[in-house]
Image 1 (cartoon, helix red, strand yellow):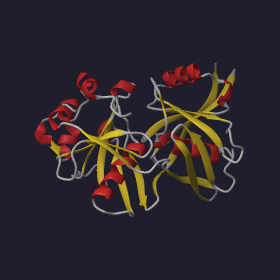
Image 2 (cartoon, rainbow, N blue to C red):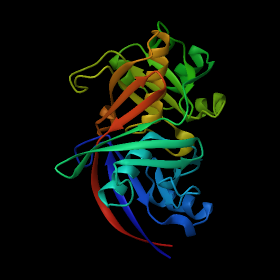
Image 3 (cartoon, rainbow, N blue to C red):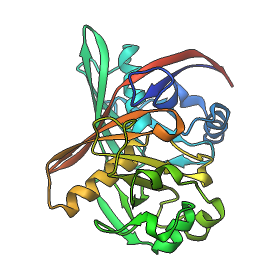
Length: 293
């Protein structure tokens, strides 16, 4: 079997920045095991596989895999897949895409300038869900930090989700964010829990590298073979949704930096609406080729 694939860098306008994604087209003939093996071969934080939709009024079924597991939803695979399909003229004639995913339907819209796709914005498939909290000392150990490095002024470490759960943690300053490292044995002591197997940590304190953003973040998912993710749309949306909820706001915009500390700067735009959480970003094409299975 020979399949066409494209790779793109997502949540960036600069090639070799952002979060790389592989998009495999026409994947209907692949088994789940083959998709997982291909995702492991690409070894990106996630790869997406485009299949025919069960409902012909939808654009496609989208299946998303980390190197070790399939996930029900993720931000950068949806942004990158919509970008690839729109750039290749595959569906979305009106600039709109509807993807069938494990977490539900994901609707994406592309923006163009001079005929080129410049940005993709999608709606998370589920409303904000806030889950259990975690012991501060335990979470600090997971991040190779101390108790004093964890900030609980706004919220304790806790699960939040708009389709894929994460443990969301605020750290007490930019230096703490930069020092953080995933302690895999400690992760295994508390995760997975309620569908969450990753920690998203953020700092409201910034430095000159971060740019004009609301906060900057990192994400660790060692059990998914993702030591650190350069840009995590689903986690950023969950964190922004949590912050807006705690601040009593149902309409707000966020600009969030990620990947700075690993040399892949990313910019994620989040819009909180009364009835949806929107995730937006730009993409850059990197490679195209044929995949032999």
